[in-house]
Image (cartoon, rainbow, N blue to C red):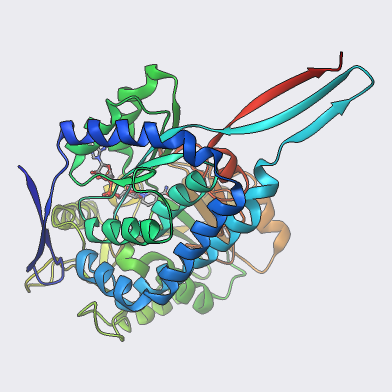
Length: 457
Ligand code: NAD
């Protein structure tokens, strides 16, 4: 295979043909990145910041074009594509404001004879292997701080978001980042695997737990920085003192935004028996109000399923749940039209024998389970191999605090969900991954500390 055929998942129509980088091309690009990186690292931080500032301005000026491309290649509703691009601007602002304080050399001890200082050196050449579901977010979380801290980046966009990857490269180069300092590698997992075989100094991966495990075994023995941002099966618990309608409206959005294809989508809901029925009624009313349709239409809320094989995963989860006693309240089927479409789907009377409550769904489907008390909810929330996010809805801060402190997850939410902040560390426990993006930790991760012991003669 020498080229990738890009199709619009909302229509099935071919929209572009893009040449693939084979192993030889990956080798050449890696060598060029390695040759270019020391010069980039020696550019004053103020100049690297100016490049990223110009990139930010170009993204802002080009939002309509960039959003249209994203919508065409991944099927994301156009308003949600714009939201992602605006979100990227906020993340860039954070990185620009925080890079100095996160990486400035710091004298931690000094007396008459010795000074001890911590410095931060770039890793060198890093691989940024990316997912398609939020290419500007998950890519930008890596390449923006990596470039700011003086690294060269070999960027492998998902094969489902190649045109977006090409836009990113063009805008970075026009903003002054040298071509060999940010290089795009086009292809499937094969191109990604070829990249892992190269002499690189770090791998920053966003994608599924299954691919993450392959990457960990491919590079684990090489002693290079390894960061894995993987999937989730994110739970939320609605307590008996919560407002069931407000919680339902918030959680329906958390489960179905981006057509359920978010790493931090709400994937399991536990509801206290006292508010269960009112919650389900309000949840169904909200879901029935979601507009499904052409992702380019401003009114659309539910778009296409980006990858066709995921339709079968969704069908199987519904069938398995129904066979084991779940009640299908709405949806449950493919929508028979060109492209990849699945109805927003809600199941109740579910339990943890069902794949729906254990395996990542990554689509607009959700199971709602009745629970008797906080202890049962907590046990169920922690009954997972994942640990990305978890939430609790209750007006009682102390109750939420008591539950959330015991949840095994990198991010916890009180009365909110499906939320990422550039100021806070983004990390997963268990099969949700390894390492941290965002926050000052997510800047320092692109550097190595150097310990300076300076004895005055
Ligand atoms: P994926 O694992 O199929 O692919 C991710 C990337 O890895 C792609 O670029 C792909 O080409 C590449 N790849 C595949 N096989 C490879 C190999 N053997 N060696 C090197 N690279 C290889 O995942 P996806 O479908 O693109 O993304 C969806 C998944 O990503 C979901 O599980 C989602 O939860 C997760 N995700 C996690 C986060 C997070 O922050 N934790 C964010 C977004 C998405």
